[in-house]
Structure formats: structure tokens, C-alpha cells
Image (cartoon, rainbow, N blue to C red; front, side):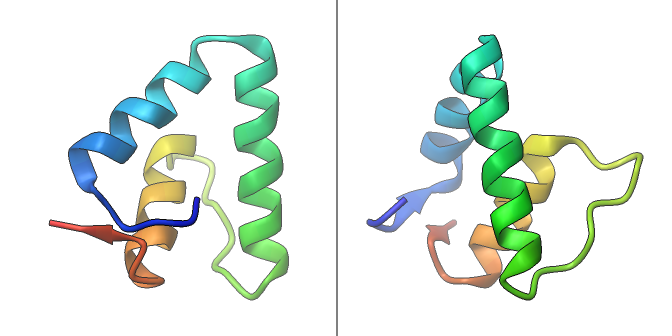
Amino acid sequence: MQATKTLTEREKELQALLATRQGKAQLEALADHYYASGGRPRTPRTSLVTYLIVHEREQGLIVG
């Protein structure tokens, strides 16, 4: 993700990807990348979408 997006826009994008196997695999890989780059570990109860959104908000990639 390059440009700053609103929370609603990004959440819709992530939900759409989560609906397919390939998309879910991409999101899992992105979560692994975020963790490897110094992010917090994803707790078992945290949804994949929530984990990604929290990380992206901390990085300034999501506004609002």
C-alpha cells in the first residue's frame, strides 16, 4: 500500500481480499512482513484485518 487511505477504504480492500484463498494468503504474507519489519506479534484473538489496520495506522498509511 503506497498512498494514504481512509480507514473505511482500507478496511473494504482488506475484506475483499480476505474473501478469496489467494487474497487471504496475500494478507497473511503481509502480516508476516509487518511482523518481520519490527511490528508487534499478532495475538491469537486478533483478526488479520485488525492487525493490518493497526500496523498501517501506526505507520501513517491510514487516516481517520
